[in-house]
Length: 79
Image (cartoon, rainbow, N blue to C red; front, side, top):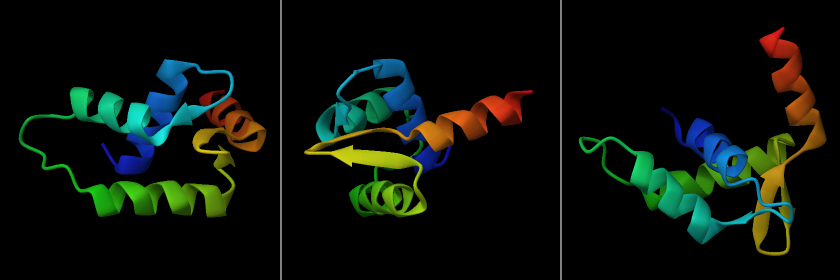
């Protein structure tokens, strides 16, 4: 699983209305990560920043949530 997919899964699973903090996203991903994969914090932060730049995530203060456009793309892709 890529870091971006893990971030999307974490935000979707946590379902925090105001967005999920970096710490909660990170702990959720590390708990669900396979034991043979090493945690790379720089890659995690790069995935967050690129997701914000691409419009997939919205940064609210110190938290992140999925953008409405990204949710719509996921629903359309599922059809």
